Length: 114
Length: 191
Image (cartoon, rainbow over all chains, first blue to last red):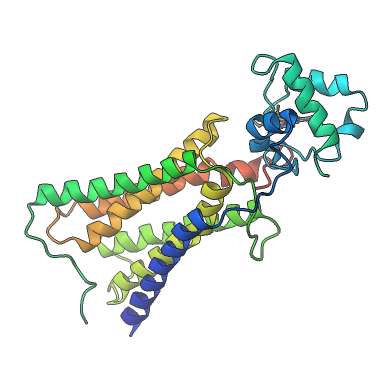
């Protein structure tokens, strides 16, 4: 009796694995993400979204959407922050050009959370 | 009572051993390739009844680890390394299967979130190691399960594979949940 239950549960586990694999491939989110079109958006998707979320909603790094302007009233302070990084947040001065950092900072201030 | 279905093959022991090793390695590599190739969605598809996706992952992983600890004890009794209870009940082997299955199923929602939402990352040593252990875990799990099903393997295969499954789970836990529990203030991930 117990063995039958265990057998049945193992079959269910195999079904769970099948669902797991199907969902890995079939379950793509809609076009989602504000990103892409603008240059700043593309830089954001490629360099920042992995930590701050596709829409700046926060993940490994804090939420950015709607909070960067109050946190850095002066855009150049945010640029300096992104240049230098802090803690887990990497410094981008060496990986992105000054123009790219300006674009992406602009993007975080104007497009995120729209 | 029939034993769980076993695969009878006319192959030599070495071939069988290689076969299950290759199958396990293929699973581990396939997960790594998926995690690397798939564009992370950075979405949180479900929280079930937890307060957030990261809580779900942390607690399910912890549960899996606890169940795996029970598995270690059950296996030790099955192999006579423990003698409590003095009479090993007849259902012990099935209990080991049941709890093992439960522990495995509990890891799936966690792994899904990692693979689908985050992907393979190298941002820090912890994250890198965590990803590698995660892929390795399912690889050795496959080896362990096939090791039960394929007949005529040397008898050290199961304890070694089982031990590796447990070790991989501990390594995953140390590079994720434990870190989460101990980093209460610093930037904690949301998923």
